[in-house]
Amino acid sequence: NLSDNSFSGDFEALGVNTGIRSLNLRWNSLDCCHAMSLVKALEQNTTLTSIKLGCNELGDSVCGPLAEILNNNAALTELDLHFNQIGDTGCKLFASALKINKTLRSFDLSNNRITTEGCAQLAEALTLNTTLRALRLNWNRWQAEGCRMLGTALQSNSTLTYLDIGGNHAGNDSMRTIAQSIATNKTMKSIEFRGNEIGDPGCKVWAEALQHNIAITSIQLAHNRVGVDGCESLAKVLVSSATLKSIDLASNNVGDDGCKVLASTLEGNCQVTWLDLSKNDIGNDGCIALAQALKSNCSVSVIDLQRNRIANKGCTQMADALKLNATVTSLDLKFNSFTADGCEALSQALSVNTSLTSLDIRGIDRQYPVDLIAAKIRDNEDQWNRLRQSPSPTKPDSDPMVDPLPFLFTCDSFYEP
Image (tube, rainbow, N blue to C red):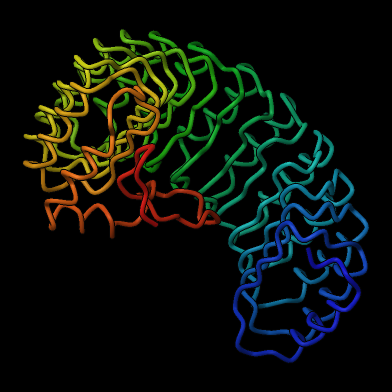
């Protein structure tokens, strides 16, 4: 908490500082006075390229001066203002600045109470801006009409590569405009559409768009009520797409049948590297199908199966697949239903597998001493060093504003930072 008055002196120092490139002030209870002090310093600073002011509830009163900085500052490439309650008033000011700005590459306006009114201004700005690459607008309030406006803007924008519009309750009808724009867009690499309740019909629309798109590498459809029919639509994309590398279907209704559909296409797919099927009510049958696919798949490196219903039978089959697979580097199986037999199978697989660098089995049956598998990993020095030193996996063309965290072998009774 840096909300005391003495902190303004540090902001003044930024006016003459030429060494600092990035400033992170998230979650610091900054008020309007501090923000104005920062703006004054930025008027003189010519070296800061990244400023993160998220979660400070600054409101719209400082948006004018901050937007003016975007009009004149030639160094700033990243600005994070998520969760600051800037509303439509602030959004309009920044939209006007984006029409002029030639340097900003990444802008986060998520969780800011922006409605259709503010979204309309942003959409217009996107038709004129030629430098912005990443834009986060998730969890605002612009709903269907705002979604249609953005879709129209994307038809003429040729520079945006990452867009997050999740959690805006867009629905299927308005979402169709964005999907149609994506079908012909040649620059968008990653789009996040989670939490929009599109269901299988909406997933089919996205799949049809992706079959025509030649640029998208990552799509996020978590929390969208996607079931078996949606998986069948996406399976067609996996067969035809030469670019799609990451699919996030977390917290949907995939189940065993949907997992089988996706697994059948992965056997011959050599493009997808990241697959998130967490929280999808997948049991042994789905896991076995996926394990079978991994025996021949040569591209998938990250698999998230946490919080499903995978028991010993499915876990054992996955372990057998790991003995043959040489591309999977990260496997998340935490909070499933396997016990001692499953853990033992994984332990045996780790003694053979040389590619896995991240394994998470937290939340398994407390009756099994999970420190046993940790001890076995420790006994293999090469294996232990590989798991201990590996960085967190990163999605292809993922959000450039998210810093990766360390990730390693994890279980309930054992952890080493």
